[in-house]
Amino acid sequence: MLTTKFTPIYRYGGTKSIARITGRRNLFNFNLDEKRNQLQSTQTYKLVRTIETTPRQVYEVVSQIDKYSDFIPYCIDSFIDKRDFITGNPTLAGLRVGFKSYDERFTCNVNCQELTEKQNYIVEAESISHNLFKTLSTKWTIVPNPRKHTMSQVELVLKLQFHSVLYNSVSSIFADNLTSLAMGAFAKRAVNLGSK
Image (tube, rainbow, N blue to C red; front, side):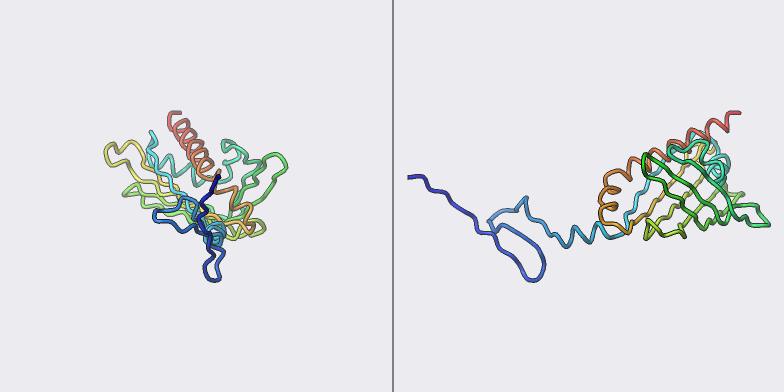
């Protein structure tokens, strides 16, 4: 006679947590509410890269938002609506991004900070158009490379959260690659302009 041993499955409290109770750690233990909360929270991606040109050159590429459509993949249009009338730096700018049937326009508040004596630069942008996103922001920090001052150490922090749980799920798969793709495009542009 063939016998099968079943391990009981239990439900706990008010959550939709399912766990198999055994003497060892269960690989299939998961909590649906916890996963849903992760997909509904802000995702943060951080990338640090050394770029073979000066911090000033990188800063000029990052702060010239109206030129993004010249070199960023999937960027159809880029624009600056307002500038600081003392520095000329953008304060309100945006992008139109398109890929296949996806076409979205973002307008952002922009904050550019220049500590030129230390060659430290920051460019922050926060979306104010919230059709697709609950949160969308970037922060670029550009400083001299600690070992070679003719090169730059650049940090890009991207924070995003869609209104849609489905979009959050998809972005959690691709956002790392998109952050790397964007950093690569900026690095190539800065090096090319720096060598002219």
